[in-house]
Amino acid sequence: MKKGIIGKKIGMTQIFDEVGNVIPVTVIEAGPCVVAQKKTVESDGYDAVQLGFMDTKEKNISKAENGHFKKAGITAKRHLKEFRLEDISGVNVGDIISVETFAAGEKVDVTGMTKGHGYTGAIKRWNLHKLPATHGVGPIHRQSGSMGVIDPARIFKNKKMAGQYGNEQVTVLNLDVVKIDAEKNIIAIKGAVPGARGGIVFIRDSVKA
Image 1 (cartoon, rainbow, N blue to C red):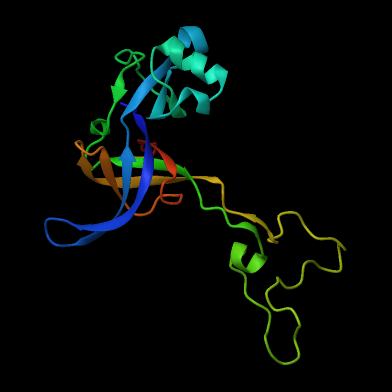
Image 2: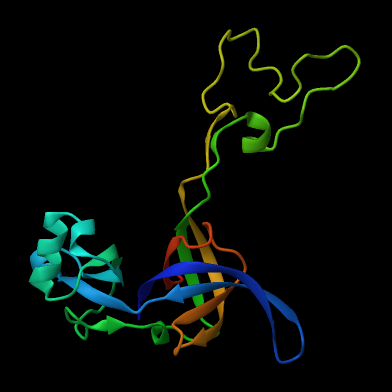
């Protein structure tokens, strides 16, 4: 059964398994989420549910969003995310989706926005080598080397150059769920996930597991 939930990244820590091995984990506050909309093949051409996460004031969202939530009969939410599911017959608008949907030992995919670094040079953005710092080479050292060749006398597309670095959506696949804390709505996932502390992430069951 496919499933998904919205969460907020709390940070990273480490826990120990039953034999004493150290496991680095990312702690995520996942849910509770409420079903704000239900889409079916008959009405929309595919099966999906739209989840809302984190209460907010009506003045903080648009009139269209307020109308959407009032139609569903739920309080205003700060974040919305649609998850495509194979079977939504047992899900209805207003249902609560909790972290108990997942279990320890499962494989999940986590999507988030990476940390933004702004306009960044090629050395930091692409991890290129610096130019020599001695033997008369200079005065610039933190830039890429030769850009092209004599023939053709142009720079090819997709050359690794300076530009916007970070602040892009990234999905990490096949991460292990290490621990679930239903009382605190906490899920501990092995390894790192995209984004800074406090960032919103989307968790779904793995598509490749």
